[in-house]
Each structure stands twice: as structure tokens, then as C-alpha cells.
Length: 135
Image 1 (tube, helix red, strand yellow):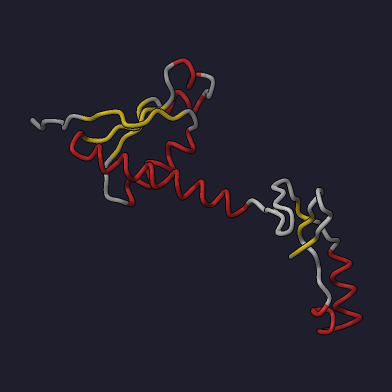
Image 2 (cartoon, helix red, strand yellow):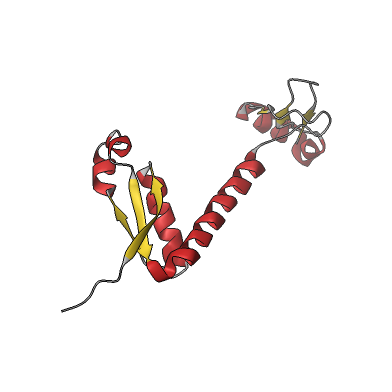
């Protein structure tokens, strides 16, 4: 008869998608893991609050390495979110937004001006604080 290795819960997660991403990240680092309670939360997300969410379990001997991998996962995710966030280069305002340009405007300028249109700046971002626009 096979003896099952002792497992320990290293993370409790509310969202099913996040739990699966963490499990895949651990598998990429060759750490075996299992999700406990994933079907209940996957079928009805409200149950995640009742039963403590999805529990990510690993073997006891892999627990420290798994915690380091999870910390690395969340750090990379945070850095990616900061990279996506656009900050104004002149005043430092963080609530800048993307300017949506109509495609007909771009198409018309390329058709009429040809490559000369690439010399004109098409601004992508706008700062509501200082009204600065930049690419």
C-alpha cells in the first residue's frame, strides 16, 4: 500500500482562476501541488467565503520553496501592473488615460500624406492635470 506524503496548506485563495495560475506556476518550478475546495468555489464563488476559499497544498518538504515561488509570482504580477500604469512625465500624475484615435483619422493621414504622416505625432496618452500629451 502506498503511503501518501504529508501536505500542508500554504495559501488560501478566493478566486478559482488565481488558484489555477498559482498551481501552474508551481508546476513550472517542478513543485507538486493540489487544490482543495476548488470545485465548490468554481461552481459557486460565494462559497469561497464560507469554506475559507481554495486551499493550495504542497508536500511539507516543498513548502518553503513553494512559498518563495508564490512570492515571486505576486511580485512579477505587481511589476506588470505598474508597467501598464501610465504616469505623466511632466507632473507625475498617475491618473492619465489613453486617447482613443479614430481609425479613419490615421488611415486618412496615411493615404493623403504617405510616409510623411509618420513625422506627425499621434499622441496616445493624456494627463488631465497638466494637459500634457505624449506617446
